Length: 144
Ligand SMILES: [Zn+2]
Image 1 (cartoon, protein in one colour):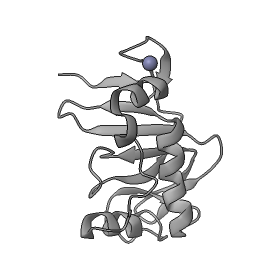
Image 2 (image 1 turned 30 degrees about the vertical axis):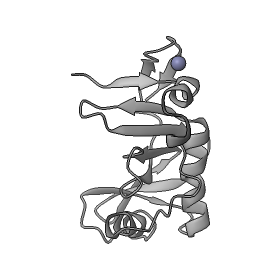
Image 3 (image 1 turned 90 degrees about the vertical axis):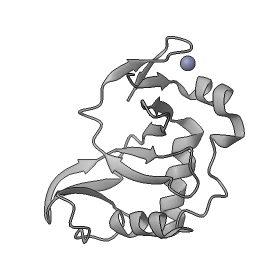
């Protein structure tokens, strides 16, 4: 089953208050704390071959990215029903590393596993490779 996409308005209609992480503790589980450290401490310590790190690693800023994304981003639902939310920030929010080498600036926030408060976390991506998809419910074009 292919991924499906929903614009922000249709995301709110479908998931309502569940599409909101304003009060979620984004470092409240071992998993999410690990993701917070991975995506806020440069140079990357994660050992991942490619990782993005937010420009500002303060927790309020980090949680703000999630709140903003959920407040205006569009949603991708993958074949397992997992929800990821993409929000184009329109400015540089982080940098992408390959190993410990800077490779690009990132201007888009992706909040993954948005359906699970124990796993939801943001990281930044480049908008360039993103594609235009169509909202399943209303047909509006969205980036995803
Ligand atoms: Zn829509």
